[in-house]
Amino acid sequence: MSAGTYTPRPGAAPLPRMIAAQTALETRMLLRNGEQLLLTVVIPTLLLVLFSSVDIVDTGAGEAVDFLAPGVLALAVMSTAFTGQAIATGFERRYGVLKRLGASPLPRWALMTAKTLSVLVTEVLQVVLLTVIAFALGWSPHGNPLSVLLLLVLGTAAFSGLGLLMAGTLKAEATLAAANLVFLLLLVGGGVIVPLEKFPDAVQSVLGLLPVAALSDGLRDVLQHGAGMPWGDLGILAVWTVLGLGAAARFFRWE
Amino acid sequence: MNSEPRPAVRISGLVKRYGDKTAVDGLDLEIPAGAVTAVLGPNGAGKTTTIETCEGYRRPDRGTVRVLGLDPVADAARLRPRIGVMLQSGGIYSGARADEMLRHMAKLHAHPLDVGALIERLGLGSCGRTTYRRLSGGQQQRLALAMAVVGRPELVFLDEPTAGLDPQARRSTWDLVRELRADGVSTVLTTHFMDEAEELADEVAVIDAGRIVAQGSPEALCRGGAENTLRFTGRPGLDLGSLLKALPDGTEAAELSTGAYRITGGIDPQLLATVTSWCAQHGVMPSGISVERHTLEDVFLELTGKELRA
Image 1: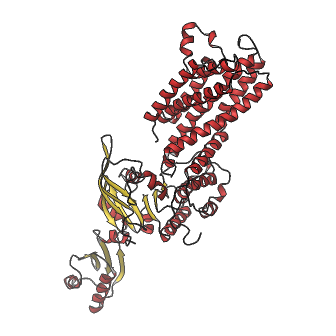
Image 2 (image 1 turned 60 degrees about the horizontal axis):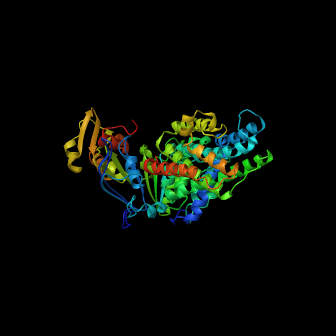
């Protein structure tokens, strides 16, 4: 490199370019990570295919896939917005990635925007994949797509807040363990593949307040039963969103 | 090098505490623009805290910090595009490839360097598709260095840039720092290595227990304070009183054993010439002349009472 190569010429790139670049990088990191793919793609797909074709769980009247597809969509949102985001962000914090980016021209809010966009991009890929598979399994969804979209967006916001709260306060290893444990517990007890009716009444009403239960119940109301806006479930998700994002904003530590 | 009107960094009365531990304790420091400044100190002296306060990571408990005339916390948005940062470790996605990470960093800047050329320059071309976590320690260090300069900053902060590098890679890093200086970039680096400070720095700031204990060019630091020694052997029983009259005040001379002489004080070329000409006048043939000049290492030890790499 010749003389004058390093002559200072500082300047930040335009914000949209920075956010686009950061979103692309975050998404590539996620799709390159084997454990993340297991969580976001392999597990939801396997559950959908397995439980739709083999009669293991009693999913009530009608086709099993009509019950399972909404639950698995909720699971997909949780796997990306909560579990995947918590683990990835936890390790980025641990390895100083968040710190180093904090000294770059990219503002922190733009970094968080890029993370959110990357989660949304991943979810779109998940929804497309799972929808195609569900249709192949004979899924016949009903309802208003707008209600579905609203549920997915609010669910994403609620899970993101909780995931970032965990990533920004716990050690990376603790986040890894806790995020996976929560994923597993909510998978079983959140009405994703096992109907909540299988649990005792008292337990049911508590489990129904879980974000993944609200999301899968809301999606099921619309997609399986053709209901209108599931306001109750949206309300539960909204409360989780406010609590999660509020606590994350308050307690998140960048280093 | 000090002709720039405004220093790159101006710190006055900086105090930074973590709980009841005081990391930086009333530190004053001016770092000249367009030069290479080395911040030297033992572990826990407050080097990294000081640098990270300049980078905007830490808020001073007391005192003021100005970097390129800006407040690193309040003016962060304006300052960040103008500085380059190399953290002591990490800072890179473990799943990212070297060229991918560097290209990304370039995209965050308006007028970045040519990424391909920078990769070649730092010998990172061989990393190929290897992700960060599988790069060697040296490759990881060089990638972090490349990320600090790719945005064409006015000022770069390098926190121990050559820790863990082999001699060849160290030299290559030094060359890059010299090229930065030649092109007018200001560099602040922390280091454990005396030779690094002596080779590279225009200015050295020695930091101990959260304060600056000495600052100046490496030559000035080695000259000032520290006593240097000249030894020679000659005919026994020389009239040292006569010799001392010819030498500057404060110089001392002694015959340690028969015919073995030691002169201590500010040993410079002029003094050496005076001693040899005095010997010539007195018909003395001095032999085994040796000059022991203090290194920055000695200076450091005298100032802090500590080995640099404890």
